Length: 322
Image (cartoon, rainbow, N blue to C red):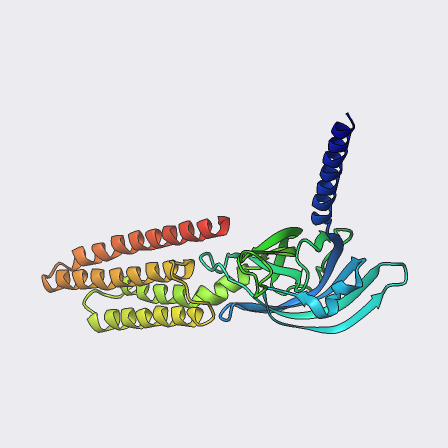
C-alpha cells in the first residue's frame, strides 16, 4: 500500500514539474503601445519609387532593455533620422516620444494614372526582440495626421493602423535556432491617397488632344492640297509622340498597359486613320470625283471624331472608377 502511495506521489510530482516547465517556456510577451502623428508627406517621386514623411512616434512599454532609440527598425525606409527624442520613465513605464524624418520606398500602381489611388506604407519593428519578447498594440486615440499640411495635390482617403506578426524565413545567423525561421511583431500604418486630378489631367494631356485636333483639321482642307494635309498630319504625329515621352519621363517603368499608353495609342491610331483617309480622298480627286471626295471627308470626319471621343470617355471613365 505504501509503495502504491509512493508511486502516486512521484507521478504527481513529475506531472507538476512538467506543467511548470511548459508554462515557463510559453512566456507571455510584453506589450508596447505605439502611436503616430504625421505632420507632412511630401516629395512623392514616381520615377524613383519613393516619398518623404515627417512624423511623431510615441511608444509606451515596461522593459527598458527594449531601447527603441537604438533598436527602432523601419523595414520600408531607405533611410530615416531622429531629429528629436524624449524619454520619461518616472512612473515605472518607459514613455518615448521621437520626431522622425523618413525617406520611404514604395511600389506605385500607375495603370490608371493620373486617376490612380495609392497606398503609402509605414511599419516599425524592434530589431533585437522578437515576438516572444514583445508585441505591439496600436494607440488609436485621437487624430493621426494634420489634414492641412500633410499632402499637397492629394487627398487622404483612408488611414489604418494595425499590428501583425511578421515572419522572416531566416535565423539571422543565430545558430541556437533549430530552423531558419524568425517572427517579429510589426506595427503597420496604411494611408490611402487619391489625386486632385482635374487640372493635372489637362496639364498632361492637352498636347495630345491638340495634336489630334491638328490632324482632324485636315478634313476641312481641300482634298487636292496634299502638302498641307500630310504636313499637318505628320506634325500632329510627332506632337503626340513627344507628349507621351514627356509624361513617361516622370513615371516608373511598367510592363503593363497604362491609361497613358492607351490614350496615346488611340490618338496615334486615329492620326494614322486621318492620313489614310486623306490618301483615299486624294485618289478620288485624281479621278475627278471631287464632290464624292468632299462628301467622304465630311462623313469620315464626323465618324472619327465621335469614335475618338467615345474611346476616350470609356477608358477615362473606367480609370476613374478603378
